[in-house]
Length: 175
Picture (tube, rainbow, N blue to C red):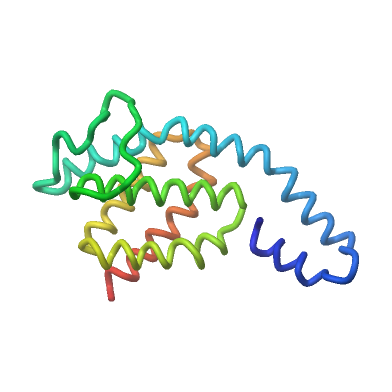
């Protein structure tokens, strides 16, 4: 559930929700089916997004791994879920993680949750286990690929989440 709505419901313990509070819940629930549809469409394009990100990294980063570590790419098969292994697997795991959490944030309609719970933690984790400038470059590539691959409505609702993650990576890159 959305952070603000959860706080509102908790604060209403022992009383009925006001008409304004009921309206906020109604508004949130009315948009849920649209948010779930965006999640379905992004899921259908996940492999394409990952592939485009990896291609862009190969063009921009000298020595970026190329070969068997990307089994299934680019023929559309599912890529490994683990995100563990060689550099390419770690990078695609990071991209997948950020994309999926951005979608989850959108389904929740909750930038606060994404920023406070996801972005800060994972940006710190990723920049502590990989070169911060590479993580930042990767997330900027993800943002560009999302803008290119997804339609206008999908990119409009997901870009704010990815922008938050990029800002967190910038902060950890400066640290």
